[in-house]
Amino acid sequence: MWTDGIAQEQTLDPITVTSSLSGKRSSETGRNITIVRGEDIVKLPVHSIDELLKYIPGVEVQSRGPQGSQSDISMRGGTYQQVLVILDGLRLNDPNTGHFSAYIPITPAQIDRIEVLKGASAAIYGSDAVGGVINIITRSFNTETQKNSTSVQAQVAAGEYNLVNTNIGGYLTRGKLSVDAGLLSNHSTGVQQRGIRGYFHNTSASAGVNYKLNDYWDISARTTYDNRDFAAQNFYTTSVFDTASETVSSWWHQLKVDFEKNKSKVSLNAGYKTLDDEYSFNRSAVANQNTSRLFQSLLLYQQELGTTTSLITGLNYQYRVIKSNDRGNHSLNIAAPFVSLSQQLGTYFNLLPSVRVEFIGNSSPEVLPQLNASLHISNWQLRSSGGRTIRDADFTERYNNYGKALVPKGQSVGNPNLQPEVSWSYEAGFDWFYQSALRVSATFFQRFHSRLIDWVSTPYANMPRQDNLDATGAYSLAKNIAEVNTTGLETDIQYIGKISQQQRLVINTGLVWLYSKSSEANPSFYISSHARFLSNFNVQYELGNAALSFAGIYKSRRAQQSPAINAFVSKDYFLLNGRASYSFVKQKLAAFAQVDNIFDRKYSDLLGAVMPGRWLQGGISFRLGK
Image 1: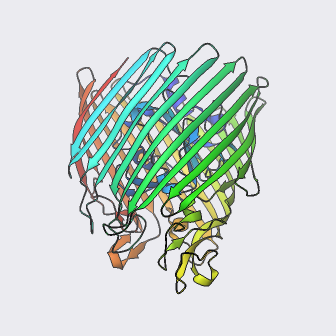
Image 2 (image 1 turned 135 degrees about the horizontal axis):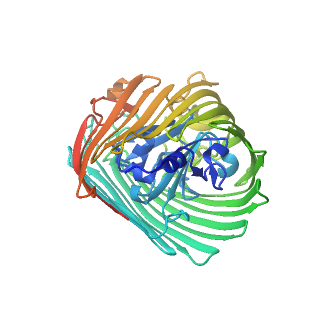
Image 3 (image 1 turned 90 degrees about the vertical axis):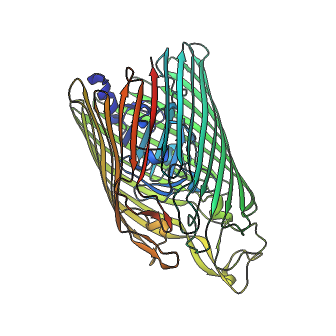
């Protein structure tokens, strides 16, 4: 059942850590932030975390395959490499490619909340935080978790195309100890595609623990395993011979130690990620085998300097490694000190200046300043932000095809001399709160981007490295060539209301208008693939023991076609998923039916990667909490 008005207000204007790394009300940060509570995820008609993101206002998810197979995340017209995904304070983005950013190895029952920060935040987080930041905060790493609580949830579903989904998880807090664990798996033989069935076998398992040693010290740890085995036809090419399959397996280990006394806090957060990727273009091709490693640490010091002033300073270190039969063996060191000040001026005005200096390998240091400001009066927040961001090239852009004995002409070749992409971003907006049930937001933003990385047709004579190339051919070489200016307007509406003693309604919706102008006569797909107009929403309605939820998206974008594989990307599409459930046994057990793509719309987010049509499924769920 629904809680009181105080809880509603905390949901509409919650404490958030994403914008400044310290807890602040969303209305004091100067940023547009959307919060999704963990307990709401299981109520929506989605199967994985990347599918959930698809229906969060302002987030564009370009799906290549269903139910966690592969998705590219874009925000505010950025590319799929320009959104940073964070788990409990550390980056998940893989150093090999941005296509793996949506592989979030956590289950819904373990999530306390997801904070989506729209816009640049490189002064705090560094490279990749260009279009926005997605921060997943788990229950065991949230030190504010309610004491002596227990929650267990389980869900099993089956459907067409031999679909079997399992979602089991929970958390336990007793005194000084907090534990969470979960398993999420989605399996199907898939729908028939041009040359292969669109199968997927995707599984994530995770366990986390927090222990408060005494009044000052606590320690948190997490281990996760994630495996995605799926059909990848035309995920990366538009070749008629492409009947690809791919397997991506990863481990994630994290350890965090916190010390807090009086007005000071020190934390050390360290993580180690390993990822193995095996991609086969077709059955006769030699598979690309890539192994990437990412070690990172984040040392933070926070100090309250008074009732209106606080300081955060820190040092972030990353060691990135790849070993590949396609890209070769390479490594990269990154170090970045940063400092952020939070200053309240008077009763209503907040100012948050930050600066970070990023040292990437042997390149010149990149200085990343940012200034956020907010004015909060009564039911209104006026906010603005501006700053400089970068996005460093991944190993694919630097070394693609470097490890092969001979690269056939026409293929893409990496460039180790790439410089980081650079942009300046500005935004201004407002939030309006009505009582404790409604929040309306609007934001105008601009981003001026230079040195964007693109793949350019280059003759053999002009290739910087010719060792394994065909002297009679031309290749697509990664270069810093493009300038793109993006202007946009986004609106968000969040409503949380108790209609009656038995009825509750939750609505999250938003609109985004985008206009991008490129210096290229024919911009590449990745630069120009974002939606020109985007609207996404999720709705939950509860009436006694019955519940109904919908998640939908409408997008308008540039149309494309490839006659060779009979594929097209339509100018626009509308997609709607729905779920109906009825609970019994004191609302602990429920039966549900779900329909994905209710209107059976044929659509693709990527040319050749056709998404499934209408998909029927149903199951049972169990929930226990105290």
